[in-house]
Each structure stands twice: as structure tokens, then as C-alpha cells.
Length: 217
Image 1: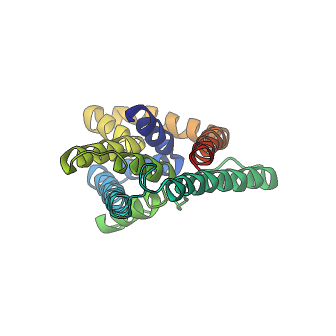
Image 2 (image 1 turned 60 degrees about the vertical axis):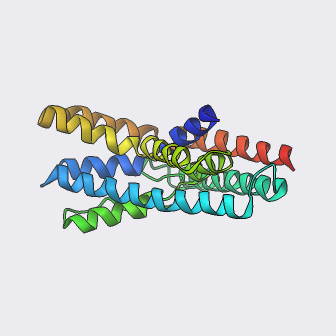
């Protein structure tokens, strides 16, 4: 279970718009408070959506054992969503030829400096549509574990999903301004390889979830 869950969360953490946004905050005024507010927004919305998925799955028994068809259709729907986003991304690439910070699982404009609540709201908006995370939490919810273990598993999912925001914050907190060249280099690499990486991961995860769902029907 853990291998599948962590792989899904790790694929969802490949989130260029979140990296560009967090580096923007880390390069501005009050960089640590703003970046923490942004990450807190992401953590809150993923905690809320994760909790809702756990409650939904366990309330209606949306598992292979209790309701195999709806459970399988959930996987097919999430996988199809990832393929649709991949197709949209590919079409944009062919139409514009641009390499930008678009994402498979949502997009957001790079924010300007402002109050902490605005950074928090940006985190909520950017991390709300996390399809891979939804699929991972659904697997966790389908396990016959107690609430404490389930809560711990969802917490781990959130940590992994937010890695792209957490790592730059930790790096900046440890080495301060010396981290700026590395963070700028990371941004350049992300904007350069955004589309191929997201296409590969999106298609791979989407096909996997669709295949998993179809086999369970």
C-alpha cells in the first residue's frame, strides 16, 4: 500500500507552479512568513480534502471489498482527468510553443507581494485540485486501519505532496541568501522541463489508474 501511495503523492508533488510561487515569496520581503503562509494554505486544503475523501470512502464503503464498481470508477475518473490535463498541456505546447509554468493539476498566476492572508489563499488555490493526491488518499481510506494510523498516513501524504514547497523553505532557513543561486537554477530547470516531465508523469499515472480501475470492474 505504502509504495503505491507514496509514488502517487510524489508524482503529484512535481508541481512547477508551486515551486515558482514559493521561490517568488522567498525572494521578496518577509520571505519566511510569506512562504510559510503559502505552504500552510496548501497543507490546510489538502488536509480538508483528504479528510473528506476518507469520510466519503468509509461512509459509503467506496472500496473494492464493499463497492468494487464505484471504487473502480473513481480510479478511472481520476486517471481520465490526468489524461485530459495532459492532452490540454500538449495542445497548448503545440499551439504556442512556449515553455511556461502551466501544470497538470491546476494553474495559478505568480503572486505579488502582499499580506500573509494572500499568500495563504494562493496556497489554497494552487493545491486544491490535486488529482494524484486524491487517488493516494483513497487508497489510504480503503485500508482497515484505525483513525490514528489513518491520520498519520494522510499526514505523510500531505508532507510528500508539499515537498516542492517545503524543500526550498528549509534550504533558505538553513543557509539564507546563499540558497538564492540554487533556487534560481531550480526555477530555470523547472520552467525548461515542465511540459515533458508533466506529460510523462501525467500520462503514466493516468494510464495506471485507468488500468487499475478497469481491471477491478
